[in-house]
Image (cartoon, rainbow, N blue to C red; front, side):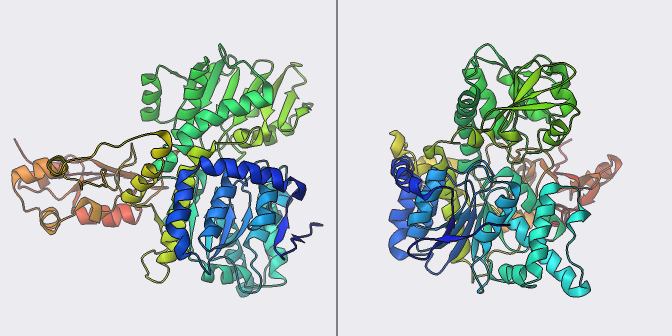
Length: 598
């Protein structure tokens, strides 16, 4: 590829669209800093001690004005940074120019081709002969994926001499990845393994990337520790929900100038992102219909006064279609053909496979009319009517607008800084294994607290008596470790489906005192103890295995025979949680603690 890295007068590498926009970018960065109190507080608290001194951080995350404030927070704490965007349309060129000139190596511009996108990702990971980065800030998991695929290919090449074959896949984007790895093997056959050995860990920003991490953890291929930033409450319940509520209508109106009021808006998926999108459309006056696979999310939508139907039920009536699922093949070309003339189809999930863009592009006789960048009308030959697709099926809020506002991104990015600090500070302690972790609750609450003053909030203080009454410290944390607004209990495992909290409470979280632990493991304890403390449903799921019913060891006599008669496998709590849940052996584990009260 005929792309050349450029250098600033100080010798810093970069590749951006237009360095003349740097002054404009700097002005907007200064505006954003005022709206990002969490990040600015990190600079104040940690800046003097330079905790990232000597750390190399690679970022693969939308190169926006808000991300610029994150990058300069990392550099203010002592880090050296190389950055690329995680989406071909999401870069704000003036932000990239300002950071490239003033702060860090940036390889990003709006409107990259897929080849250019992966070139930029490779450049962001390239720290020269000394290996790769110490830490990765990832969004969607592409930087993490490139290293994992590179290590896999190097090991095969070393054993067999066989190079990766791009023709082995029909996925055009993965062909590019394999080509990059293949070409690199010819010059440095241990490049990605050197990166792996140096890497302390990764912090992942979004649902899609988190799903990839949990899949690798489940199959034992995760190469380094990872912190799941997405499932911090101050990320998923703010960025995903309120950020999308703000940026979806912004992108729609900038791209199409459509009147939302009175229209029928179809929101595919009602997770955190879907909830924000549905709320935005409802508040703008649209009639909102939700499609869902999950009965709980569907019931939530109904409780908000929304209709829940299948896409086929409503495809010919909708005016605006938004995919929010993180899954693939949500809107297919045959469904697009049935839509109203000039129905708007867009995606706000991370990747572009929610909408069948390949099927649309290859449909016989279809005509593409570009209205303006990231706004295309596709006309079908048999009906002579068309649909409007935004951002080529990619993230429309960043492709057609500027994404989430600074304040809500401050919540997300403060979590990123804290996660990076945690990984770096614990690099020699062995605290983090090759698993996926979430930030502890007290840090989640700290992130929230840092943003209250900006909005004029004042917290009520608990008295000691009140704190004792509800068994929490006066200064928090106020919620248990597993609290994620709406979660199931279990050990750090991913779930099938979309936009759902991962399972993250460990055995130790459930049994906090030696007395409780002894009682649970032995089944010895008073009837009152078990009735009040241990009657709890624990539901967990992971990929690829059949459903299984489990009854934990009955605490009182008489329970075992009845349990077996009801089809439960009787085991101990520790077996159930540690063997079945932690090892991921069961597709669905239902663990009960049951007192015989009859």
